[in-house]
Image (cartoon, rainbow over all chains, first blue to last red; front, top):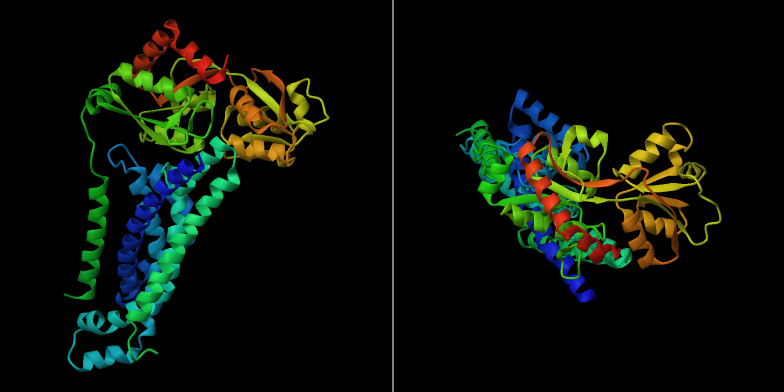
Length: 214
Length: 267
């Protein structure tokens, strides 16, 4: 009996991973765009990006989730719980990823841009070929922290009815009256997921390290 | 191409992916019932953590009184049934926003709820229960007696409204002595652990949980907040309401619902 219950929670793992795989790249794209705007965008765009970050980091993810799912939706714009949940998480995460990437962009010294401009590169070329390749490498360690946060925050989409790990654990807790077993299993799965991704990203960070950054 | 163009392009991609993922649906049926029949599937919400009305079994299948009943209703409507599982307090909002075609989750009629959504006719009549741990020494003769105790209840239920309106709003029960839980089984575990004195809930699940957990007993049974159980449908959806009401009537006449009650509540 417990092995079937266990496999029921395990099936939720695929959904947890799927939510993360949508939210994380979506947040990365949006976050990178916002980080570039904030760093190189000029006066007005700069402020828009700053406000975006301030606003989103000031609201708990679950509140934003409910706003996007229940309030902004209408009959013609009917996102499924999975997509609504994943995109909302992605939008929340984009603000944090933006700050991570902005820090990394600024960490690549000013001299790099000046030097690139001096050899005749345009600003875009300089960012594309000189700044970004260094900044993205620098961003991996703090970014891996954000990855574990998104993985764990994916448990919030249970509130919209996405049958991921936590929701399944709740159902089993209700059926079996064994909350420790149900939530303990869920905790174990989350831990394994986070541990594995962090180790993989450590490895990536090590592999892509430039000889100049020791 | 300058940075600003790249930014505009990136945001366009993001916007486009949002819009694309949101597409789908948009059938132009005369009413909601027609739309459901055209789609061939009815999306019904439930909170599968409330045995014996709705829960999951060892293989993850939904089981229970409401589950069997809704399956039969969908069959008679001639459409497939698609279950959407959500926490109880998200269900009404989901029906209201058109995320669900209907919802069945041991809902009792409630005037506040009726303003936001519509109810089908009753398919079952439920009672309220007060449950205590075996070691409880007090006495509950009248429902109002619980005002001197620590009371627990499931958030968003009719029992929650009853306690809030009749005891908290009148100042008999201090707000800090009313403990609200996401689910009834959490409330019951805390009751058993002695963190609270008494739980107010529907009678049938209280009985089922008390039997399963042991060490608990029901000290009061009667209709206070509950009563008729109904299926929740979108506001003003007269056609779907009528279709479901006709089927409920048939099922009552045929004894189908009585048989379900025997199967799940051992009545």
